[in-house]
Amino acid sequence: MKLPMKRIFTLALVGLLSACTSQISINDVLPQQELDRSIYLRGDFTLWDAEPQYQFKQVGPALYQAQVRFSTPGKVYEFKIADADFSEGFNCGYSDSQPSGQSLTLGQSTRADCNTIYNYFSYTPAIKGSYIVSIDFSDYDEPQVTITKK
Image 1 (cartoon, rainbow, N blue to C red):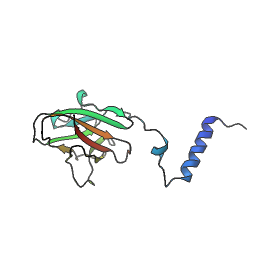
Image 2 (cartoon, rainbow, N blue to C red; image 1 turned 45 degrees about the vertical axis):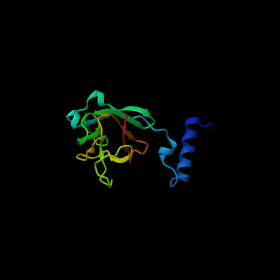
Image 3 (spheres, one colour; image 1 turned 90 degrees about the vertical axis):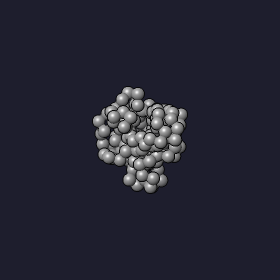
Image 4 (spheres, rainbow, N blue to C red; image 1 turned 180 degrees about the vertical axis):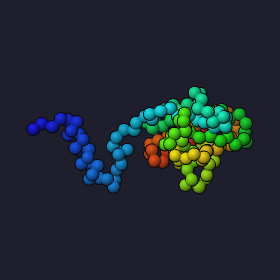
C-alpha cells in the first residue's frame, strides 16, 4: 500500500513532535502565519479610532510596524495596538507582569497583553519627530512591543 506524500509528512511531523515535545514548539516547526485582520495604533492622538494612516504593515515574519509623529516633547502619549473592534486577542496593551508598567522606553522591547481592556501603553518623547512602533508576534503568547525613533 502506497501512502500519499501529505500523509507521510503528517505522520513524520506527529512523530517528531511527540518525541520532542519538551524541546520544541509548533512555532519552531511551522512557519509564522500572517494576521487574519488589520491592526492599528490607536491612542489619544487618534481619539482611539482605527485610522488608516496608523495601520500596521508587515515588515518581516510575524513583525508589524506603524509610524506615528509625536509633536510635543514631554507630553505623555497613550496608545494601544488593536484591530478595528478591540477584539479579544487583538487588543494589545501593557502586560501586568511587566515591572516597568505601561511606560515604554525608546529601543527596549516590552511584553504586551493582547487580551487586556484597560492597559494602554504610554510614551513620553524627549524630542518631537517620527517614531516607529513595532509588535513582534513570533511568540503569539508573549508579543513584544518596541518604540524607536525614525
